[in-house]
Image (cartoon, rainbow, N blue to C red):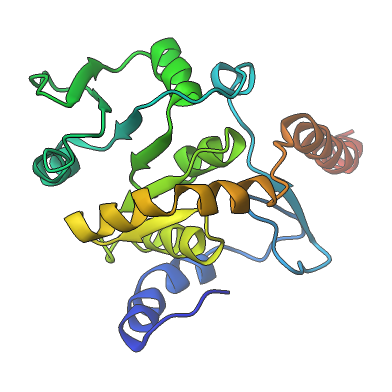
Length: 224
């Protein structure tokens, strides 16, 4: 549960809540996220979000640059703001060919290089997708997020990041917002380290296989 104002509650009720209720009744649910809920129903098993091998195999380092990963439309909004922070270095990953500028280095999207620089950066500036957040928390990288309020899943994720003090989030990038983020990096790191996030890929896979077997055996018995 997160605190929501009236406008957020209306958007949630009209969109995401109705989608959740459209699912048929289930017997078992596997829930994955970058933070553990305080409680879950009996038919729900929680696991920390699985991390891909390109990231999980790397050791955490810290060099003096920030990794930037957004969609093309989002990059158009944040790039002009980043220019104001000339003392900071940013490495931007983009599928679109963009020009490197003073303190902003642009690189093409490539899995291994992205993972390597992800592990070496000082912090991550990105949208509020659960994969990026989980990988940043795993590598102890403070987060700066911006996302539209209408994209409720990401808006929800960004609010959780703020509540957990994993970073700073806003609906559109601002100089004041980034200043706040840069001024509180040590606090964010401390919160992330104490969060106890440990990827549970193997444990989750084992549980899912066990569920599949328990369902498949009775079904096979009926077939024969």
